[in-house]
Length: 311
Image 1 (cartoon, rainbow, N blue to C red):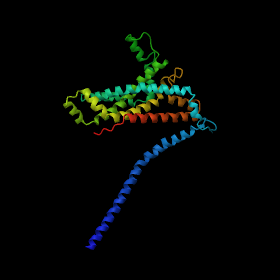
Image 2 (image 1 turned 90 degrees about the vertical axis):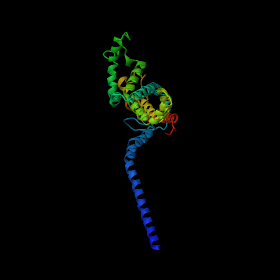
Image 3 (image 1 turned 135 degrees about the vertical axis):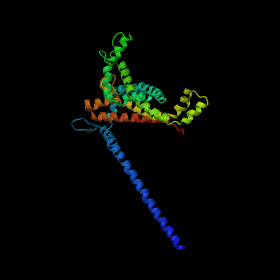
Image 4 (image 1 turned 60 degrees about the vertical axis):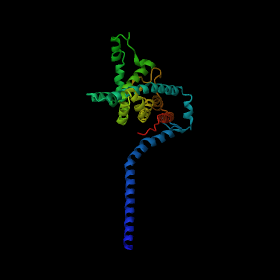
Protein backbone atom coordinates (compact mmCIF):
# COMPACT_ATOMS: atom_id res chain seq x y z
CA UNK A 1 0.00 0.00 0.00
CA UNK A 2 2.82 2.37 0.92
CA UNK A 3 4.69 1.53 -2.31
CA UNK A 4 1.61 2.25 -4.38
CA UNK A 5 1.12 5.61 -2.60
CA UNK A 6 4.76 6.61 -3.18
CA UNK A 7 4.48 5.63 -6.84
CA UNK A 8 1.33 7.79 -7.22
CA UNK A 9 3.14 10.75 -5.67
CA UNK A 10 6.09 10.35 -8.05
CA UNK A 11 3.75 10.11 -11.05
CA UNK A 12 1.93 13.25 -9.86
CA UNK A 13 5.21 15.15 -9.53
CA UNK A 14 6.30 14.08 -13.02
CA UNK A 15 2.96 15.20 -14.46
CA UNK A 16 3.25 18.56 -12.64
CA UNK A 17 6.78 19.12 -13.99
CA UNK A 18 5.69 18.13 -17.50
CA UNK A 19 2.72 20.50 -17.25
CA UNK A 20 5.00 23.31 -16.07
CA UNK A 21 7.41 22.75 -18.96
CA UNK A 22 4.51 22.73 -21.41
CA UNK A 23 3.17 26.03 -20.02
CA UNK A 24 6.63 27.64 -20.23
CA UNK A 25 6.96 26.50 -23.85
CA UNK A 26 3.56 27.98 -24.59
CA UNK A 27 4.55 31.32 -23.03
CA UNK A 28 7.80 31.45 -24.99
CA UNK A 29 6.00 30.47 -28.18
CA UNK A 30 3.53 33.32 -27.61
CA UNK A 31 6.37 35.77 -26.98
CA UNK A 32 8.16 34.68 -30.16
CA UNK A 33 4.99 35.07 -32.22
CA UNK A 34 4.35 38.58 -30.85
CA UNK A 35 8.00 39.70 -30.99
CA UNK A 36 8.04 40.69 -34.72
CA UNK A 37 5.02 42.95 -34.21
CA UNK A 38 6.56 44.49 -31.08
CA UNK A 39 9.81 45.16 -32.92
CA UNK A 40 7.95 46.63 -35.89
CA UNK A 41 5.95 49.01 -33.67
CA UNK A 42 9.05 49.95 -31.68
CA UNK A 43 11.21 50.67 -34.74
CA UNK A 44 8.63 52.39 -36.92
CA UNK A 45 6.45 54.13 -34.31
CA UNK A 46 7.93 54.44 -30.83
CA UNK A 47 11.45 55.42 -31.87
CA UNK A 48 10.28 58.05 -34.42
CA UNK A 49 7.75 59.34 -31.88
CA UNK A 50 10.44 59.81 -29.23
CA UNK A 51 12.78 61.44 -31.76
CA UNK A 52 9.99 63.79 -32.87
CA UNK A 53 9.21 64.75 -29.27
CA UNK A 54 12.91 65.48 -28.64
CA UNK A 55 13.29 67.49 -31.86
CA UNK A 56 10.27 69.60 -30.92
CA UNK A 57 12.30 71.04 -28.04
CA UNK A 58 15.09 72.25 -30.35
CA UNK A 59 15.69 74.84 -32.98
CA UNK A 60 16.57 72.16 -35.52
CA UNK A 61 17.38 73.39 -39.04
CA UNK A 62 17.81 70.93 -41.87
CA UNK A 63 21.46 71.96 -42.15
CA UNK A 64 23.65 73.25 -39.37
CA UNK A 65 23.71 72.91 -35.61
CA UNK A 66 20.59 72.51 -33.50
CA UNK A 67 20.00 74.35 -30.22
CA UNK A 68 17.79 73.50 -27.26
CA UNK A 69 14.99 76.07 -26.84
CA UNK A 70 12.58 74.22 -24.53
CA UNK A 71 8.90 74.90 -25.19
CA UNK A 72 9.53 77.86 -27.48
CA UNK A 73 8.22 76.00 -30.54
CA UNK A 74 4.95 75.26 -28.74
CA UNK A 75 4.64 78.87 -27.57
CA UNK A 76 5.17 80.03 -31.15
CA UNK A 77 2.02 78.16 -32.23
CA UNK A 78 -0.17 80.57 -30.27
CA UNK A 79 0.74 83.37 -32.69
CA UNK A 80 0.90 81.20 -35.82
CA UNK A 81 -2.20 82.31 -37.71
CA UNK A 82 -1.56 79.89 -40.57
CA UNK A 83 -1.55 76.95 -38.15
CA UNK A 84 -4.91 77.93 -36.66
CA UNK A 85 -6.31 78.54 -40.14
CA UNK A 86 -5.09 75.12 -41.29
CA UNK A 87 -6.54 73.46 -38.17
CA UNK A 88 -9.92 75.09 -38.74
CA UNK A 89 -9.88 74.17 -42.44
CA UNK A 90 -8.95 70.55 -41.64
CA UNK A 91 -11.75 70.37 -39.06
CA UNK A 92 -14.27 71.82 -41.53
CA UNK A 93 -13.12 69.36 -44.18
CA UNK A 94 -13.53 66.46 -41.71
CA UNK A 95 -17.01 67.61 -40.67
CA UNK A 96 -18.12 67.79 -44.31
CA UNK A 97 -16.54 64.59 -45.60
CA UNK A 98 -17.16 62.16 -42.72
CA UNK A 99 -21.01 62.21 -42.68
CA UNK A 100 -21.11 61.94 -46.47
CA UNK A 101 -18.85 58.88 -46.39
CA UNK A 102 -20.90 57.14 -43.72
CA UNK A 103 -24.33 57.87 -45.20
CA UNK A 104 -23.35 56.65 -48.67
CA UNK A 105 -21.39 53.68 -47.27
CA UNK A 106 -24.37 52.59 -45.15
CA UNK A 107 -26.75 52.76 -48.12
CA UNK A 108 -24.31 50.80 -50.29
CA UNK A 109 -23.80 48.21 -47.53
CA UNK A 110 -27.56 47.65 -47.36
CA UNK A 111 -27.78 47.31 -51.13
CA UNK A 112 -24.95 44.82 -51.63
CA UNK A 113 -26.32 42.56 -48.87
CA UNK A 114 -29.32 41.83 -51.04
CA UNK A 115 -29.32 38.30 -52.42
CA UNK A 116 -29.96 39.21 -56.04
CA UNK A 117 -28.17 38.08 -59.23
CA UNK A 118 -25.16 40.18 -60.16
CA UNK A 119 -24.72 41.82 -56.76
CA UNK A 120 -21.08 40.68 -56.70
CA UNK A 121 -20.33 42.93 -59.69
CA UNK A 122 -21.59 45.95 -57.77
CA UNK A 123 -19.57 44.98 -54.69
CA UNK A 124 -16.43 44.96 -56.81
CA UNK A 125 -17.33 48.21 -58.57
CA UNK A 126 -17.93 50.05 -55.29
CA UNK A 127 -14.61 48.84 -53.87
CA UNK A 128 -12.37 49.44 -56.91
CA UNK A 129 -11.62 53.14 -56.05
CA UNK A 130 -10.15 52.02 -52.71
CA UNK A 131 -7.27 50.21 -54.41
CA UNK A 132 -6.35 53.26 -56.52
CA UNK A 133 -3.55 55.35 -55.05
CA UNK A 134 -4.68 58.64 -53.55
CA UNK A 135 -2.20 60.67 -55.59
CA UNK A 136 -3.32 58.90 -58.77
CA UNK A 137 -6.98 59.54 -57.94
CA UNK A 138 -6.16 63.20 -57.23
CA UNK A 139 -4.50 63.60 -60.64
CA UNK A 140 -7.44 61.89 -62.34
CA UNK A 141 -10.00 64.15 -60.67
CA UNK A 142 -7.89 67.25 -61.31
CA UNK A 143 -8.24 66.48 -65.00
CA UNK A 144 -11.98 65.81 -64.62
CA UNK A 145 -12.49 69.17 -62.86
CA UNK A 146 -10.45 71.12 -65.44
CA UNK A 147 -12.48 74.05 -66.81
CA UNK A 148 -11.08 73.66 -70.35
CA UNK A 149 -11.41 69.95 -71.07
CA UNK A 150 -12.81 68.41 -67.87
CA UNK A 151 -15.82 66.13 -68.02
CA UNK A 152 -17.84 67.83 -65.26
CA UNK A 153 -18.02 71.26 -66.84
CA UNK A 154 -18.73 69.66 -70.22
CA UNK A 155 -21.71 67.73 -68.84
CA UNK A 156 -23.06 70.72 -66.90
CA UNK A 157 -22.82 72.95 -69.98
CA UNK A 158 -24.63 70.41 -72.15
CA UNK A 159 -27.40 70.12 -69.57
CA UNK A 160 -27.60 73.94 -69.46
CA UNK A 161 -27.06 73.91 -65.70
CA UNK A 162 -24.24 76.46 -66.00
CA UNK A 163 -23.61 79.22 -68.54
CA UNK A 164 -19.82 79.15 -68.45
CA UNK A 165 -17.16 76.71 -67.19
CA UNK A 166 -16.46 76.70 -63.46
CA UNK A 167 -12.83 76.88 -62.38
CA UNK A 168 -13.38 74.40 -59.56
CA UNK A 169 -9.92 74.44 -58.02
CA UNK A 170 -9.41 78.22 -58.11
CA UNK A 171 -11.80 79.03 -55.27
CA UNK A 172 -11.63 77.81 -51.69
CA UNK A 173 -15.32 76.82 -51.54
CA UNK A 174 -15.54 75.01 -54.87
CA UNK A 175 -12.16 73.36 -54.37
CA UNK A 176 -13.31 72.01 -51.00
CA UNK A 177 -16.43 70.62 -52.67
CA UNK A 178 -14.39 69.09 -55.51
CA UNK A 179 -11.87 67.45 -53.20
CA UNK A 180 -14.65 66.28 -50.89
CA UNK A 181 -16.42 64.55 -53.80
CA UNK A 182 -13.18 62.87 -54.83
CA UNK A 183 -12.39 61.68 -51.30
CA UNK A 184 -15.90 60.28 -50.81
CA UNK A 185 -15.63 58.40 -54.12
CA UNK A 186 -12.18 57.14 -53.14
CA UNK A 187 -12.83 56.00 -49.55
CA UNK A 188 -16.51 55.08 -49.31
CA UNK A 189 -15.77 51.51 -50.39
CA UNK A 190 -13.58 50.74 -47.37
CA UNK A 191 -16.19 52.07 -44.93
CA UNK A 192 -18.82 50.04 -46.80
CA UNK A 193 -16.79 46.86 -46.21
CA UNK A 194 -16.54 47.63 -42.48
CA UNK A 195 -20.31 48.06 -42.27
CA UNK A 196 -21.04 44.93 -44.30
CA UNK A 197 -18.84 42.88 -41.96
CA UNK A 198 -20.66 44.36 -38.96
CA UNK A 199 -24.05 43.66 -40.50
CA UNK A 200 -23.12 40.06 -41.25
CA UNK A 201 -22.15 39.59 -37.60
CA UNK A 202 -25.70 40.40 -36.44
CA UNK A 203 -27.57 37.13 -35.75
CA UNK A 204 -30.24 36.53 -38.38
CA UNK A 205 -32.53 35.26 -35.61
CA UNK A 206 -32.90 38.79 -34.24
CA UNK A 207 -33.96 40.24 -37.57
CA UNK A 208 -36.22 37.27 -38.31
CA UNK A 209 -37.91 37.57 -34.90
CA UNK A 210 -38.48 41.29 -35.43
CA UNK A 211 -39.96 40.54 -38.84
CA UNK A 212 -42.33 37.98 -37.32
CA UNK A 213 -43.37 40.55 -34.71
CA UNK A 214 -44.40 42.90 -37.50
CA UNK A 215 -41.41 45.27 -37.55
CA UNK A 216 -40.92 46.84 -40.96
CA UNK A 217 -37.60 47.15 -42.80
CA UNK A 218 -36.79 50.60 -41.46
CA UNK A 219 -37.84 49.64 -37.95
CA UNK A 220 -35.44 46.68 -38.03
CA UNK A 221 -32.64 48.95 -39.26
CA UNK A 222 -33.32 51.63 -36.63
CA UNK A 223 -33.96 49.54 -33.54
CA UNK A 224 -31.86 46.43 -34.19
CA UNK A 225 -29.20 46.97 -36.82
CA UNK A 226 -27.98 50.46 -35.88
CA UNK A 227 -27.62 49.77 -32.12
CA UNK A 228 -25.72 46.54 -32.81
CA UNK A 229 -23.41 48.33 -35.26
CA UNK A 230 -22.08 50.76 -32.66
CA UNK A 231 -18.73 49.00 -32.35
CA UNK A 232 -18.31 48.88 -36.12
CA UNK A 233 -19.29 52.53 -36.42
CA UNK A 234 -16.79 53.43 -33.70
CA UNK A 235 -13.90 51.72 -35.47
CA UNK A 236 -14.79 53.08 -38.91
CA UNK A 237 -15.42 56.58 -37.54
CA UNK A 238 -12.09 56.75 -35.72
CA UNK A 239 -10.23 55.63 -38.85
CA UNK A 240 -12.16 58.07 -41.04
CA UNK A 241 -11.59 61.06 -38.76
CA UNK A 242 -7.88 60.26 -38.38
CA UNK A 243 -7.56 59.90 -42.15
CA UNK A 244 -9.29 63.26 -42.70
CA UNK A 245 -7.07 65.08 -40.20
CA UNK A 246 -4.02 63.56 -41.88
CA UNK A 247 -5.16 64.71 -45.33
CA UNK A 248 -2.25 65.86 -47.49
CA UNK A 249 -1.94 64.15 -50.89
CA UNK A 250 -5.20 65.38 -52.39
CA UNK A 251 -4.59 69.01 -51.42
CA UNK A 252 -0.94 68.91 -52.46
CA UNK A 253 -1.83 67.52 -55.89
CA UNK A 254 -5.11 69.30 -56.63
CA UNK A 255 -4.75 72.78 -55.11
CA UNK A 256 -1.16 73.10 -53.81
CA UNK A 257 -2.70 74.71 -50.73
CA UNK A 258 -4.20 77.56 -52.75
CA UNK A 259 -5.72 79.85 -53.51
CA UNK A 260 -3.83 82.07 -51.02
CA UNK A 261 -3.21 79.22 -48.56
CA UNK A 262 -6.97 78.73 -48.08
CA UNK A 263 -6.78 74.94 -48.54
CA UNK A 264 -3.72 74.20 -46.42
CA UNK A 265 -4.32 71.34 -44.01
CA UNK A 266 -2.44 70.75 -40.77
CA UNK A 267 -0.23 68.07 -42.33
CA UNK A 268 0.43 70.36 -45.30
CA UNK A 269 1.57 73.11 -42.90
CA UNK A 270 3.79 70.60 -41.09
CA UNK A 271 5.28 69.62 -44.45
CA UNK A 272 5.92 73.25 -45.42
CA UNK A 273 7.65 74.05 -42.13
CA UNK A 274 9.75 70.90 -42.15
CA UNK A 275 10.78 70.57 -45.80
CA UNK A 276 10.16 73.97 -47.38
CA UNK A 277 11.23 76.33 -44.58
CA UNK A 278 13.64 73.72 -43.09
CA UNK A 279 12.32 74.26 -39.54
CA UNK A 280 12.32 70.64 -38.42
CA UNK A 281 11.95 71.52 -34.75
CA UNK A 282 8.80 73.57 -35.29
CA UNK A 283 7.44 70.94 -37.67
CA UNK A 284 8.01 68.30 -34.99
CA UNK A 285 6.16 70.40 -32.42
CA UNK A 286 3.22 70.74 -34.82
CA UNK A 287 3.25 66.96 -35.30
CA UNK A 288 3.11 66.33 -31.55
CA UNK A 289 0.17 68.73 -31.16
CA UNK A 290 -1.66 67.01 -34.04
CA UNK A 291 -1.04 63.63 -32.38
CA UNK A 292 -2.52 64.91 -29.11
CA UNK A 293 -5.57 66.28 -30.97
CA UNK A 294 -6.12 62.93 -32.69
CA UNK A 295 -5.80 61.01 -29.41
CA UNK A 296 -8.38 63.30 -27.74
CA UNK A 297 -10.79 63.01 -30.68
CA UNK A 298 -10.42 59.22 -30.79
CA UNK A 299 -11.07 58.86 -27.06
CA UNK A 300 -14.19 61.07 -27.32
CA UNK A 301 -15.51 59.09 -30.28
CA UNK A 302 -14.91 55.73 -28.61
CA UNK A 303 -16.57 56.98 -25.41
CA UNK A 304 -19.65 58.31 -27.20
CA UNK A 305 -19.99 55.14 -29.28
CA UNK A 306 -19.23 52.69 -26.48
CA UNK A 307 -21.45 49.62 -26.57
CA UNK A 308 -22.13 47.23 -23.72
CA UNK A 309 -24.65 45.19 -25.71
CA UNK A 310 -24.09 41.45 -25.56
CA UNK A 311 -25.49 39.19 -28.25
